[in-house]
Image (tube, rainbow, N blue to C red; front, top):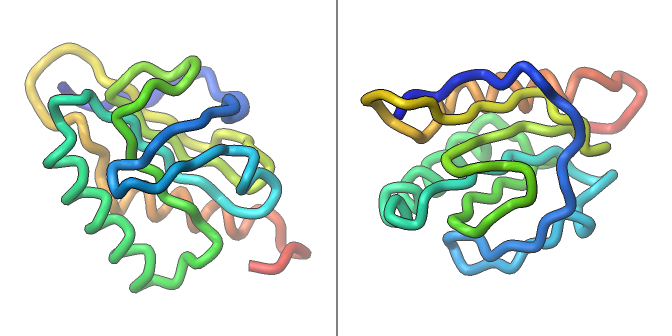
Length: 130
């Protein structure tokens, strides 16, 4: 499946999931505190998605995006069908969302693109600390 950009953006729905690394994550724990990258994968893609999550975390650490929480999960998230990825600012506004369409290709989004959207989230509020 190839990723497509979703035209309708809004706010992150409240969710309570277990990330592929075993962390239990409730969105209200980071809302208004941290930016979010949320990747929802199909259950059969868990192994590849776990490797992807490690690479994404390492990439963000390397470029110092310390105010971003990365959640990669195979659990259901209200209003978001797997596979999908979103980037939201600390107030929950979705800045970028990708969903799968039919056809061949990867359902895991490009790390560089997600990183660019996180950078965009960080510069949206110049008076806010990074």
